[in-house]
Image 1 (cartoon, helix red, strand yellow):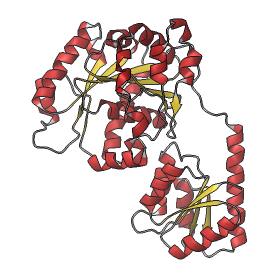
Image 2 (tube, helix red, strand yellow; image 1 turned 90 degrees about the vertical axis):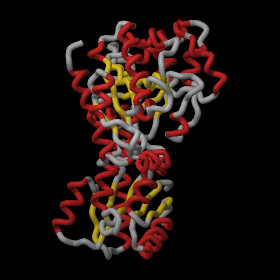
Image 3 (cartoon, helix red, strand yellow; image 1 turned 60 degrees about the vertical axis):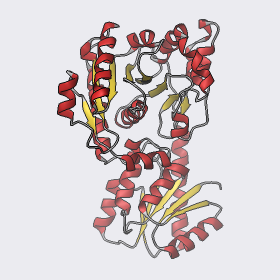
Image 4 (tube, helix red, strand yellow; image 1 turned 180 degrees about the vertical axis):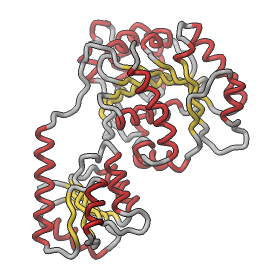
Length: 391
């Protein structure tokens, strides 16, 4: 046996005794002494089964289960609640929040072993029945959203990542997130992914005929969250490829047919490829922050996008206030100075984004019940509504 079992329990005796017993059965064991630590380990280690206590001081097992089920990487992970809570109501709540099985302490080791074995067997059967998810050519373009900032450092990549993750969580179908600036890749480090030459390969192709649906599909990297990501190189020397407009046009047309939603991280300002990519975008999110200079830059960017043929009704400012500061203007003032309606405002959440980086997980998955997630969901719902309209 090589299955990994994560035990989450604040009782050190339970961790030691149960862990040792399951190790002797040939399982790999990982342990966490509280709910948050358990969530972090679950998202980082991708266990085959989670053995979960209910009564823990910081976050009880019910809440841990809710968060595990809200995360695409653990939504199907078997959860066995192993607890001293014996009331029928406790058991019912456990199943309602998403537990697969419920066992009360104390129990005979053979019964625990049998429950663990049965849950793992059912999970393996289910895996065998499900083909691995890969993007497929639908023959029809997906819904493409470009995310752009008037200048660097406004959080356009963060917005793009979390919108994509939110779409994957709430909507059926494949979601592709694509970095568009070679030499400026950030997502491989942010998400703990192996560095990829996906975008560079597309832009380096000497013949446009070599850019096929299959080659674009193979250039995507899959993250544990379920996102399919076209990663840009983080090597500054690759920046020269930014002028390969014909290549951009060739691979964007193929990329748009591979998923239901395609989120493009367009970076900052107007790049040489912008006019080639923009016609493929159904909607544009323009990210800004609440200070006067950025508002001026953003207003100019919106006017330039409009001059390229993008209808103003398809351009949507997103106010991303990343830091708590008295210099940040409130949304109403930003909207008044900008002259365009703010689609949504993201309030500062530095602790959440620090945790997301540490766990290499999008913030909306890291804390699905947070205020930030609810704010991102407004963007997700807007995209879903626009996609449902006739095109």
